[in-house]
Image (cartoon, rainbow, N blue to C red; front, side, top):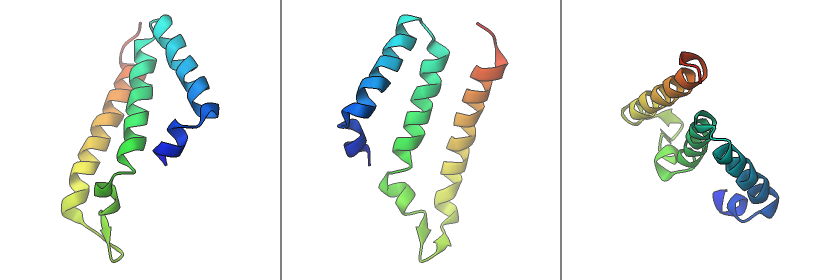
Length: 86
């Protein structure tokens, strides 16, 4: 429920403060990881994700792009965490 979460000041104020703090300290790696996590959370609520399972059966032709995108996102996060130093 991104509409409810984005209008909740108990979430928005600390989240905006955290992002502002990371931007002020120029922690770009952390900001990219936060963006990837927010993107994954947003994509998980789309109608495309809702249509992956039809009548209790997984649609294989629709799941493959999700698997490759997830592997790419995980690869990016792993590279940012372990691949190089600041």
